[in-house]
Length: 583
Image (cartoon, rainbow, N blue to C red):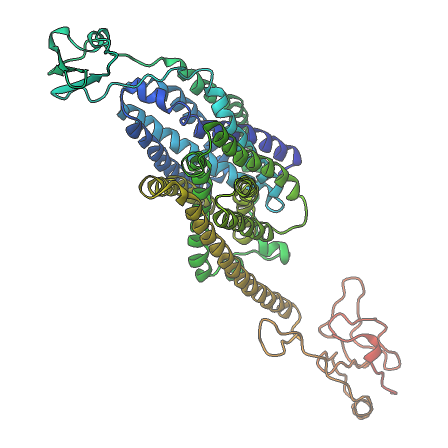
């Protein structure tokens, strides 16, 4: 039973709403990072480790869900529902965590649910559409981008208006607080330390006053406001409607009833199943060895550059190009704005007949050329603005198009999709750290050359993947032709292959010497059978092996009449090649 269009429409609507929440969940921690650090009284560096924890959870969720989606196909919607439910619970608990370890546990659980949800929705979409999944895939990931843009807007009303730095290193034996010529307000010290442990010392030469707090204990702790928790609760609320919808579909088991495993061989040859000819439907081992690691590396580099450039372009513009913060923020908005607009228009481009491989090739070459021009003319403001917009435009549709391209190359499975989602997560985690270290230790201007090298690398990997898939398609084409001829040969014993190869064609029929044939038939008194190999038909022959359910043949033919059948049921030649005996 195939899935109806209404069922597909319902899935793409609710999965898109879920992906809006997915984008919010992935992006909400960035704007609220300082408030989380203030609440837990830890440094920003320690708080930033939560991104790595969430990434490890997302990798775990992608792998586990990939296995479950292959082994329990009928529970695909149940996996989506469970992932959404776990995500809602973890998002509600994270802002109320009282210890860094507790936040780490629930951040990891949140990452597991996010990775499972991402992998499950992509896999189900590819299975439902089978072919022509491009527009739906582009819409799904456009919804993710909408959620990523909404996250700062949701957090902005609830984050602290003034930065309240958390008090951290106050367990040391001595803390020196130096005031300038204008003096230091000692009343603030009484809010932090016991008054008995505060002493002052004046440096007469510079007029600075230093307050020394030795072996002190905190008497008052400033705790950040919990208003930012409402941003997490709003992010969790975006998942409520998809949770209800997917739970409803899961209870009805609609996906289990409507999904039919794709059998590419049975589509080509009716009546034949891939289990009868397993080599035809399964990729070659060498293809798997080169294709899946290459695909993993391609997506890892792409997502890493997308995240690195999008997050560090602000720092690059301020430190290297000497932009004002407002101008740098506008440059950052240009990148993500062009990214979103291009992903929206990619939905309509996917309706065209342009192959996915061509779209990927154009995008990879375009993004590499954009960064190359920015590297050459790095000091030109106009080139930086245009190059940033062009980079966001070309990079927008690579990820969803790669998902659709995957379904064209291999059988869709949860593990195959997990290769892409896992590579994307690891790329988001590793490459920004590398780029950040280069900016801190070398120079902020290294961001663009670093992005150029990585982009050129994934362009090269993309072209190698195109070559590998071309060779595999050629091998499968040869194999399918050979199997088709073998099936026809089993049904038609007279059909032979010219050289026994997969690309061979049936041998031409031998020409008939009519004069010699007529002489032999005149000298023969016996009745002969219909002979397909000699392309002749004797009307005096007894049709001992012929039976037509619509016309009963008598045991013998009248020697004075010829067979009136236009094509004998077992003879391989038409009536024009039949010769009657003069009797």
